[in-house]
Length: 145
Image 1 (spheres, rainbow, N blue to C red):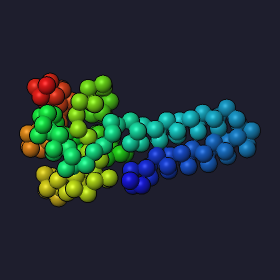
Image 2: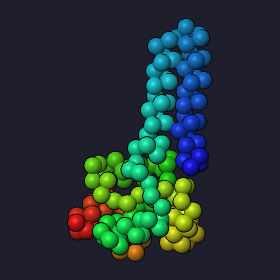
Image 3: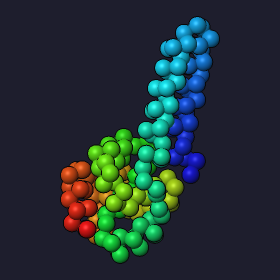
């Protein structure tokens, strides 16, 4: 769990240090702007922007029932973030597995990606698709409903 928060915590720490330095030099406005920018970067790279993650075992169980795709992701991944943002409100219709929180999910991704933890990896009907097009993912979600 801690691994997915390292990057956001580093952003907040760096922003706090830079902002404090600017404020102490007399540039309160610039310091506040720098801190705000780093806090926003931390928020975007945190697990908070993604739907609640479940385990790979739970995702397999749920997809067997409802047929929805499973997305394997990790925080700090710009491709995962791009997929999440482009899916918009439709992202909640997918099952999301954070590979940094679930070793079984990471193992599934490594098995599908020749030993690499390449994300996002979307499983549809048990078949993996690495970094798929957003429109294709939307089509898979629509066909599963």
